[in-house]
Amino acid sequence: MSDFTIMGVVNVTPDSFSDGGRYLDAQAAIEHGLELEAEGAAILDVGGESTRPGADPVPEAEELRRVIPVIEGLIARGAGARISIDTSKAAVAARALDTGATLVNDVTALRGDPDMASVVAAAGAECCLMHMLGDPRTMQDDPHYDDVVGDIKAFLEERMAFAVTAGIAEERILLDPGIGFGKTVEHNLALLRRLGEFLDLGRPVVIGTSRKSFLGRLTGRAPDERVAATVATNVLAYERGARLFRVHDVAPVHDALTVTAATVRPPWTIRTSTTE
Ligand code: HH2
Image (cartoon, rainbow, N blue to C red; front, side, top):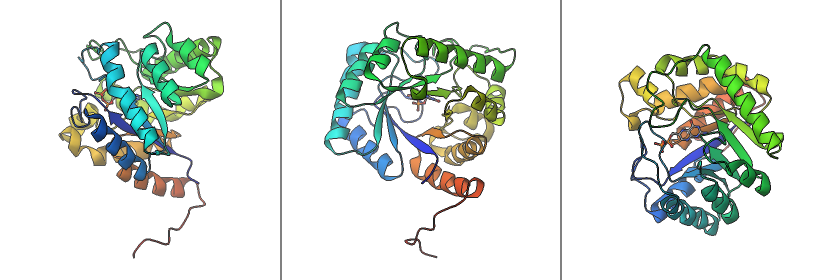
């Protein structure tokens, strides 16, 4: 039994930074989700609104039109992975939860829509609270922190208290420092280096470095050439205690984390089907 969970990204958007437009068609998104599950994703994170820097907001009706058929299709096709809805709109979360999603991944940490906390609480859903400085239009405009780890820890602690007060059970909360959301390259690296400090908050830590621009700034590579850099950061994050990994490239990250987990936390399992 592995002690890590991979969340595969299913973006049903025309403008996501690394795969925009590839899975805009519901059938393509469903096939992609099933492939990610076969590669080892235990959660499929379905999103219909890009959060890349400068992204335009998507109207609720359009977001629903993008994501609901994909969730329905994944369930109809017998997906075994749990389904997460990546949204900051309460109405989208509510419909997704009714359709069969069990986790709400809200990059605004319940600040984007006043009804979001009660929707999550009423459904008894899990929710991922992520840190973002400002909003996607402005977040990369000279972000500043007194102490990036301390400031984000305090933010997540406050958001967790808010969620619990709103009726969301603490055991259903996941926390994410929000790599790339209002952070310089140095901020992202400091968060990874000191990720273990977030374990003090007592909830599972989610990390999303996949193909992000700081990896491009460091390697000079385009988004779809950042797999090795993504693997490196996820291995580092595991070693520092993260247990949920939001990625586009599930197969390589799954292999890398399998070996990392076996090394860091034995016993490991020998798979007899491998060839020498
Ligand atoms: N990153 C993105 C979107 N959602 N959710 C969590 N919890 N953590 C993250 O780091 C995170 C997230 C951005 O990645 P992507 O979905 O590929 O891009 P876009 O927002 O352009 O669709």
